[in-house]
Length: 53
Image (tube, rainbow, N blue to C red; front, side, top):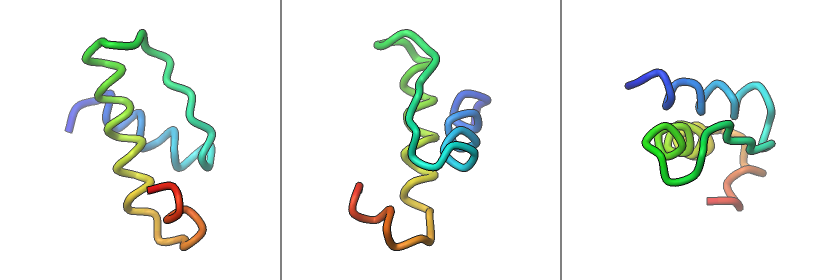
């Protein structure tokens, strides 16, 4: 797992569904951050978040 994926996961856990990707769209960093944020969402045990998947 690279640092951008980890950063995305941390962002999800720290901000509870406030998605703010700090990287420019269509870059590898943007995609990796998004991947980490989405993986954290999918792993969230809280049922209320499941409606977003």
